[in-house]
Amino acid sequence: GENSAFGATHNPVNPAHVPGGSSSGSAAAVAGDMATPDQAIYQALNFTAETDVNVGTFCFPGTDAAHQAKQGGTTPLGFVQRVINYVNYDVEAAGSLTVKEGGTLTVAVKGDFWAKTLTTATVGQKVYANQTDGTIKTDATGQTVSGHVETDFVVKTAGAANDLIVISNWA
Image 1: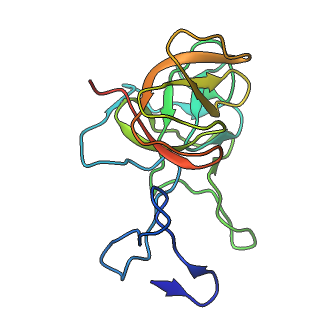
Image 2: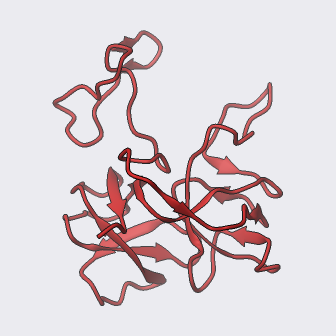
């Protein structure tokens, strides 16, 4: 469908096609959304954001590693999933994909998700998490990607830099 305020919605995987959906194709992928109906596995605890944390990125243990998560670190806890109950706006501000400090995070350790890649992504490449902000780059298995740590997620759909791609760690 088309929205007069924002124009046409494009399919993030193939801009030549509509995204589909029951509302004449107006829904498209958002970073942090589940990409398939397959199940996801989550951290047993819903962590609290020690600092602002962006949805659709990796998060890391916070100062209180048993209860908090933050945007950067050494070993990722998992991928921050977008869920509808995040209160990330007020009446004077637009919504965002940032969970504010003190908010509850849904951290997935296994699943199929939409994520924004900062590099050109090829199917089968590994996903690397930035150790400062949790954003992702992709490269071959075992590569040294400066400032990033290799995760167990792989690229399932190809994309150019800054595109949304599907990442998964299901076999």
